[in-house]
Length: 66
Image (cartoon, rainbow, N blue to C red):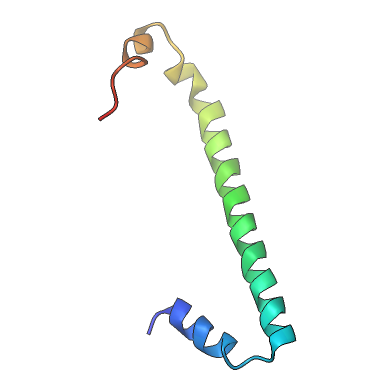
């Protein structure tokens, strides 16, 4: 049984007000995760900008995506 299955099983036994609170918490965790991921991406982009943004690198900018 996965962790998600365990959470669903336990959440299914909660009274409605507690289930709503649990759902709010899960949504909070999702939002926090997205925010932290964006922070990591922005930090990486800033630290590598001097490598990515060069005249030699410009040849890669217009490659078609598959």
